Image (cartoon, rainbow, N blue to C red):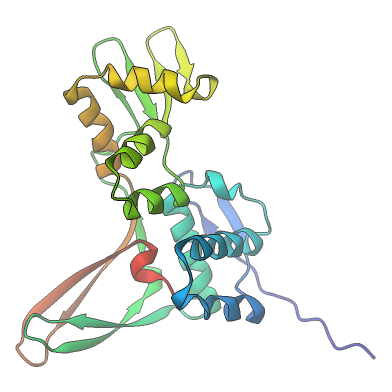
Length: 231
């Protein structure tokens, strides 16, 4: 006689960038076991496993490589909260040297979008640019790169389209050289608008506060992205 099949619970969440509702399931034991082995994994392996887990736990209904980095981070945090637990134990280092134990509630982590953030903007009185959000791989690659050219290429790859009152030029219809030529023709002030898009881009974050029981200092720490929240 075969062993019984367990029914895995499902939950719903709203994708931050587009407000679409999706269904997901928690990690299974075999998947959690993989996560527990990643403390010394390479950057490439870590990225692959996170994306694979999000993919299978959302029933492969999402285009993972097209998700913005903050969407994927948010989904992963929701998966973790339902799979491992809604809390995470942290250590806050006070400037007096004391280590403060703190338990953070992951459900308080939100994707915050600054009021002044825009993904479409006019660079002069005739021409505008529409940006798209970088995916998880692109953001991590730019964060870990020391080559300024890599960061510049990220900016170029995130230009979705160029428009005026009558036309829209989708950059997917042009090669990288053509888009680069357009970007090289921008003034410094115009390129600053593209940089502002990245500087104000939505991000997963949570602020935690704790008073030091040794010196009495009020400590405030902001957690951002999976670098702080992971496992």
